[in-house]
Length: 229
Picture (cartoon, rainbow, N blue to C red):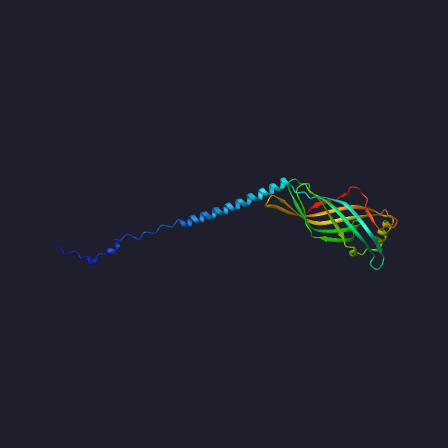
């Protein structure tokens, strides 16, 4: 008779299958792909906006306004030959500004104006912070007055030359101006540029015997040159 089987000696654990590995969740992978696609879409959108803006500015091609000195008067001019050799006068400038563009309005601000004699001798200067808005194909007049007691001292030769010119009742002045301009196209597209305006050879003639007051000789005004920086 055979011996009975003793189950206590059997290794029951060896018969169990190995534990199965849990599947990797798909949520993390889907989130990663979504973020990557979102970043790619934003980059493509940025590139598209940049290209469209560049093409739009090439088509629009913003131009500076047309500056014209329509009036320039010099009054109460006196030559002070004291220790500082100053020329004191009341200078009054009237500019006509025209926006030649049909599609781009602009805003001009922060005027810095220099009044010169013979291109490099500063007589006086003025600063104006009032902004001027020019709509499409519009035109506006704008005036500037220089403070009488802010005249720069001149060298002896320059002081004598302007004195001789004024005794002949004809003096040539130059006006140089630096200002900022903001061009806008639509709601979201805008560009800021620096403008340098030069008004050369503004001949002021006095019709009075004493030569105290004078006005611009050229009828119809003097057109200035404009450079966008």
